[in-house]
Length: 112
Image 1: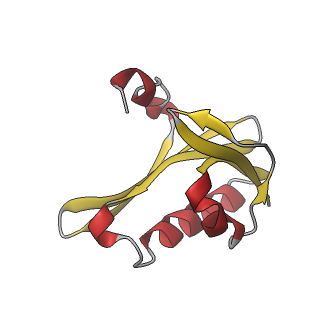
Image 2: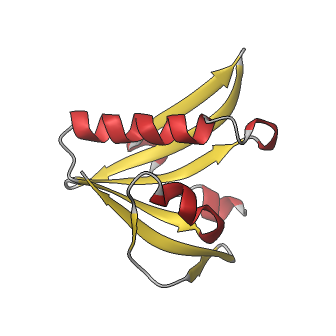
């Protein structure tokens, strides 16, 4: 991804979720609260640690954090290959497929 797409100026006011193994960050997600909903994105797990529940732990932490802050819903722009992952947590598909950074995505929402 190009730096222009990666740096959007929202990091300073965002909540950041990180998973560490030893002293290395191996997973992350970023949440920005807009009005009464959370925009969750920038979710990533290093390839060698995928399939170990790290993405699920990140998402569960974001959901608990949203509930504790009385946020009504979580919105994501999900890469199409990950839609089934989000469906398991109760997210619903809300859009047709569109390209973001030349990767197919769909908008999804979880009502809390």
